[in-house]
Length: 193
Length: 75
Image (cartoon, helix red, strand yellow):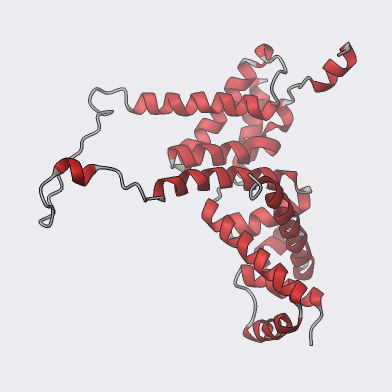
C-alpha cells in the first residue's frame, strides 16, 4: 500500500458536526442501556466533552462514530459503577416466592426457562433500534427530519407543516420517500443479518 | 378507482392512523386489484411494526443546540 491510499482510509475528527451526525445514534444507544432519557442525555453530553478532551489521542484507526461509541460505552459503565458504589447495593437478592401454589423446590422453580425467548427480544430490539437509527442518518436531511418528527416524536401533520413551512401533500411525499428508502436500507442491514 | 400514487399516500397515512374511513375503503378496494400496492402495503406495515418495536428515542432540536454550544465552548 502506498502512502496516499493510507491517507484515504484515515479518519479525521470534526467536532462541529458531531451533534447533527451522531447525537441521536449515541442517545439511542444510551437510552436502551440506562433506561432513563435524562441520564442518557447527560451521558451523551459527557461523551462529547470527553471526546474533545482526548481528541489529540485520536489516531484515525476507527471511524469517528466507533470512537464516540467506545467512549460512551465507558461512560455507561462508569454510571453503573457510581450508582452501585454504596456497599450492598450491587447485591442481587433472590427471595423465595411467597405464592401459595409453589411446590417447594426452590432450585427447580428458579431455573431459567429454556424455551423463553423474551430476553432475546430485548437485545434484538436494542440492535434493531441501532439499525434503524443508522438508516435514518443515511437519509437526505429533509426526509429524515420529517420522518423523525412524524414517527419518533409523534407530532401531528399540522404541527410539522407549520414548523417546516410545507403543505400536507408535500409532507406525505417526503414521508413516502423516507419510508421507501428505509425499507430498502433495513432490507440490506437488518433482514440479511 | 384511485391511482397507485394516491393509494400509496393513503397507505402511508394509515401507518400514522390518519386515513379517513372513505380513504380506507377506497384503498381496500384498490388492493384487491393491485398486487404491487398490496406488496407495498405489507412492507409498509412491517416497517411500522419494526419502528414500534425498536422504541426509538431522539433528542429534541433545543437539546441538540445546547450540546452544540457546549462543544463550541470547550473546543
